[in-house]
Length: 259
Length: 233
Ligand SMILES: Nc1ncnc2c1ncn2[C@@H]1O[C@H](COP(=O)(O)OP(=O)(O)OP(=O)(O)O)[C@@H](O)[C@H]1O
Ligand SMILES: [Mg+2]
Image 1 (cartoon, chains in turn red, purple):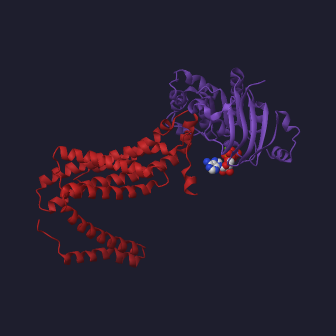
Image 2 (tube, chains in turn blue, brown):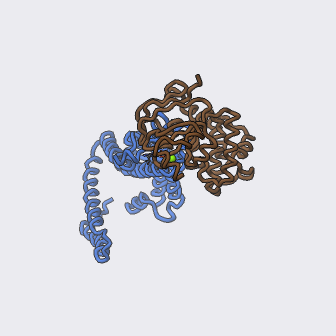
């Protein structure tokens, strides 16, 4: 792949960024700082990642890949945890969850020879799996908190009748799972129809035959689908119990949060 | 000596400060007092929905935390102040408690509906279609389905009209008589307290300001606070 994007054309992209910036400025939409800041930050981040990737890709796979995966999982864990900071054990749940998912996915890819053990293939594909799982875990955490809040009274009623936390949370867990899985399923249904998936687009741009690109896309799409589902399941099945104390009473996180 | 079911010693919880109280088997305790005085909080303690911040609660002479929690909650059935009903239907709600213990028998629903004065056609009604008073009655029936030994009621008739209050009170009386149910009930309806209760607790500022036998205690209140409370209710 000798094709490259020239530095001049990258500069042209700045004009693109300036369009929403200018509109926002004239209509006083209040976006200006955000847009500018996030484009600059995004650009710098991407260039840095590019440099690091070049370095890591030159290391032996057995060294470079674990390093890169650990870094990705750690960052993803910190990010997903933000959505449920006030809950105990969120960090461990997300961390162990992401590691488990990555191991399962790697085992699948490697044992059936879908992906070869090179940084060029493992890192970007794992990145997609981990990134999507991170988002799914964050969403599940948020959703679970709001479900516990809306169903507070029903959960109290269930407990008061003799339900264990597991029984009392049944409805809440089910709704959290549904909410986390529906967009995931919808995405799989419209794949290739509404938008060409990112990885396929990349490969085709890079000069790979579309039919080969589609095979890779299938591997990654299905891996992402399963990982996202697993993420929601792990968070829902593990986290509900931390909404209760050991005496089967609801813990008041609102109060903890407000001091 | 009568068997003491609950003994509260220096119990504090949120607004409640230093509650000392002993409840004997078969008593029908009526709790009343201003809004925010801690009536619901006190009732929750008997079902262990909440625990005291400090102090002790004894149940049949043993610390309450030495009992299995689901069993205790089933025996000390509570009707919460707001009827939080489960989806979908009335029947689903009646079955919920007994099903947790594998004790639901079909046929139970007829008697339960009868207790709370609802027609049989209501069994398959979605709970969202019920009126406030109907919800309250389903909530009461749902607790009765667990066949509690002690009944904890938090203003169970607050959303009902006089006619329904009368019929539910009658059913409660029959129930309390036939099973010698110990009852602890929060009510702001002093006439109801007189009709149903054997002993009254007047709760204000997180303390038991006055207690006495019913219906007598309303005739000669000892404190100004209770006198005022009687005047406005
Ligand atoms: N979960 C909670 N967290 C914090 N404060 C609470 C909680 N529940 C109740 N309170 C507060 O404790 C106090 C007593 O509440 P409680 O519900 O026991 O009063 P009440 O006597 O039942 O009042 P009402 O007649 O209005 O039902 C109130 O000031 C209430 O705001
Ligand atoms: Mg109350």
